Length: 114
Image 1 (cartoon, one colour):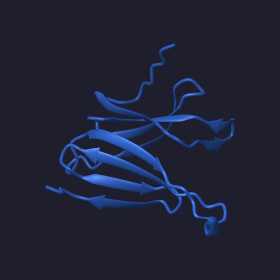
Image 2: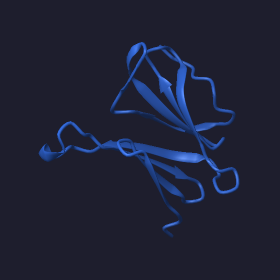
Image 3: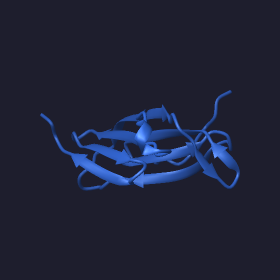
């Protein structure tokens, strides 16, 4: 079955299934994430049929769309107790790479490696 997710105002170039879920009022959510030329990364709940959970908007002057997304779940060490760190990557056309660390909610920007 095909599901349509409405929200982007331009072409979505990347879609990624998130290897982790979130807990919300309606229980656990399975999510996909989409990146678009409209400079947004959008998170969608695929269980609730198309509800947008969250949006990250890029800088209109600095960014030229989101072209690639990758989500990585890092294994926890035994001594960290129940803490899990998830690393999320987004790459824009201009060469900016953003790292979003879920546990600490920090964003690191690395520009133009070439």
